[in-house]
Length: 81
Image 1 (spheres, rainbow, N blue to C red):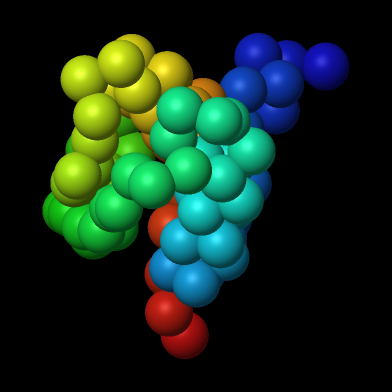
Image 2: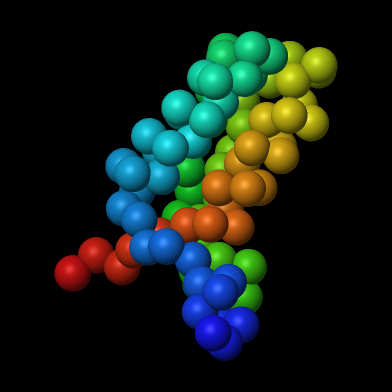
């Protein structure tokens, strides 16, 4: 297996990414009240979307950031047909 295949991101729609982030944040007790927006961006080497966290309690900031980073590493915004 080559490294590109191993580290390939899974394509997902905006709604799928939004749902995954919401469920992931809701599973962590400190992050249940975190609000977020997904921002589509021009394609870069890091990806083509990011999350803007809102209303994050100070004790939840690191956990929420880690959760979002893990999802960003796994998913790529699918190109609309």
